[in-house]
Image (tube, rainbow, N blue to C red):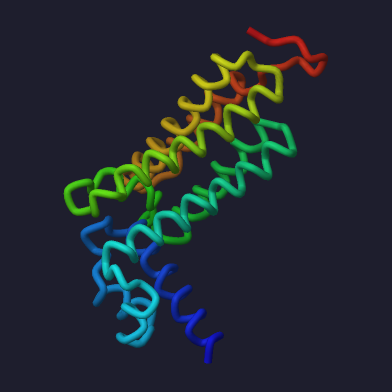
Length: 198
């Protein structure tokens, strides 16, 4: 029984993330999540006593944590260009598989600020900060000076997120390829001997 409840909660979270990615925060209603997930109605307030707001917050935190975990793993590997290629590959596959419907759920919540619970503004900021901090650590570890690493981290997040939006609008993954082509030389911050490339 406990396992079924856990599965029900996970299904609702997965559905909330999918709805955020495809339709924005306004589409994440309790009824929409129940219809998408097939979870029983009573389970919503059991798992999410705060209702819709708690469900949205939990879904965005789940999505943010997933990307942060990937970035933390990448920091251990230490190759910024490989990380960028991996993210571009992931997003190109996601866009094609969803017929260009899915974007980033964190961005969806950021741009739907009027429809989002007030506490999610801070959550979105924290998620983006965590991603940028991980990328900064990755770039610093690869040889970039700290200030430049921070600026490059901002550039990577802004460029990839913007390219996802353009790709959805154009129904073409070309913007992601453009970002990869232009950011690759910037992220190759060392020459293999530990000296910074400028």
